[in-house]
Length: 114
Image (cartoon, rainbow, N blue to C red; front, top):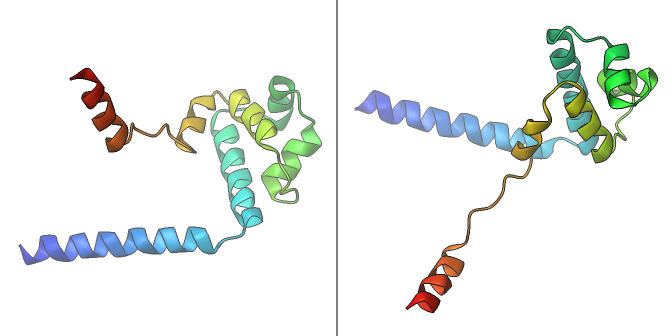
């Protein structure tokens, strides 16, 4: 039993550290990490920057700049094009998932139905 409690506390500490570290990063730092991650995804899918440029309608220079972190001003519209080009547009849902209906709204609906 003690081991389970210790693991639970350890897991909570890791999650808290990850959360804190993320919020300590600048927007540019996060975009650089996304660019690196995008590059990893693209390569794993066997796509070149030229392939992505054709699919997204973006220039190879823009894609390269995003991937190597020299450009941190990528727009959301451009990011969506890039996700679409590597068939990962469905991942956009993870950025801001749809919120469930609030308990208050559910209660109000129930009250109207009575």
